[in-house]
Length: 539
Ligand SMILES: NC(=O)C1=CN([C@@H]2O[C@H](COP(=O)(O)OP(=O)(O)OC[C@H]3O[C@@H](n4cnc5c(N)ncnc54)[C@H](O)[C@@H]3O)[C@@H](O)[C@H]2O)[C@@H](O)CC1
Ligand SMILES: Nc1ncnc2c1ncn2[C@@H]1O[C@H](COP(=O)(O)OP(=O)(O)O)[C@@H](O)[C@H]1O
Ligand SMILES: [K+]
Image (tube, rainbow, N blue to C red; front, side, top):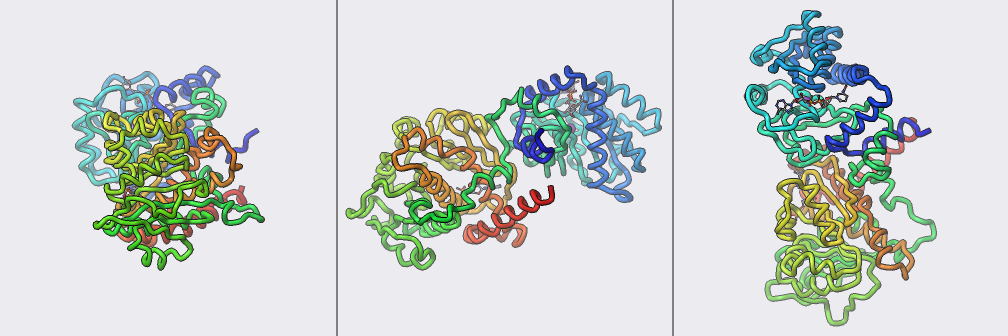
């Protein structure tokens, strides 16, 4: 039997749509779990957690918004439990037609003399609000009388805790359906809903936490599949994937040789930041092809790197490798793009035509877009990882529906190109051509600064080079491609975000310039590995 810790780790990786959640619930109900019993369980766990988050005596007055469905039912059971714990609870139920179970709980709450007001104003003096209007059953845009009520509540100042989802958010896309609660905190029930991991939802979700409902893993996996395509990144998965322990008899060439192609006189820092990101990856050998005028600065900051000084244009951009250089199989991976400028077309074309695994970013992506993203990449046999931000993504895939849903847009881009596509932002989404998708659930806006993407490119390049170096030399292209998994790329995104989070904790969100970020990569990893070890030992 799987241990409770392993089960919870698996549950934390799963992401469901509303339809999948309904199917899982139906299986549990069909197996004999009464709906009312599950609602009691949900609400007792919620009430326990709420009492821990907001202990008496302050806040004492709790206002609870009750909707027509089972989200409202959960809210009413929470109301009853908090009432018995000593909170001063009051309800607002703006609808008259309730589902049967919800109706029963409302009658019982009223019989306990918990006041229920039709008008939201009565709750304005509450210290805490609980949003139980709608969960994953919301089907259409909110209108009168609920839409104005939500708008009003969003202008108040007390914390709002949403049950399952902030009411008004689409469960899958995270988009606002007319208007949505801006929660301080969301307690998601049973399994992570896709919408909570979409960038659009972030301003509404607040801090998010999963309340485990002990849903049987067999029922969950029967619906999402044994190896679900879409998964939420976790610390445990990332740590298990990173090349943290080295074979004792290894040597530097077995630990990957990464070639960086980056920088220009104008964007000298692009080369440096990419190099420092690569350094933290632990890659065995680092070569940097950069404009010859940057050599002194790069050598001073990265003494371990081999600098390949490339001829440069009068503006200081690279156009080609030096004539003595051959782009042969001695490199396990290339990371290319940061700071190149658009004058570097010829060298990027040469790299795209090579058989070397490639991480492409920034100007590398802009040049690829000019060449025609899909046909160019369809011609490439070697593994390719694209790391665009939203602007670059739109240039690469002008027909994309990225404004509809980032996750489906990334999946489609990966499927069209055969590349692994990582869309940057507050919630990094990564997909491969087979539809395997990962979402990084935690990051910090401290990273929204020039240069932090360059750090990611170098780090990612180093991880890819190490993964490729592990393979026998004669490995086929197909196997080389499959050896670079979305999990590896997610582990890089997770590490980068954790470095940002730790740096922001120590230096505030204003203190995380890209150079500082590079200095936090190793401390953040140390901290996370120690936290994971102490969890294992305490179990
Ligand atoms: N059955 C249970 O005991 C469990 C309940 N859960 C809770 O139940 C929720 C799902 O319950 P429901 O399926 O009842 O769905 P909701 O409570 O999310 O709401 C659906 C109700 O709202 C109505 N509705 C939908 N869109 C509307 C709109 N735009 N304007 C006005 N009314 C609208 C629907 O007709 C339906 O009556 C979950 O989010 C969760 O909170 C889950 O936690 C798991 C267990
Ligand atoms: N609001 C945000 N929250 C979390 N991470 C962010 C946010 N904005 C940007 N990032 C991260 O910061 C990095 C920015 O990269 P990019 O846009 O390429 O910048 P640059 O090219 O200047 O380095 C990416 O890793 C991205 O995911
Ligand atoms: K809700």
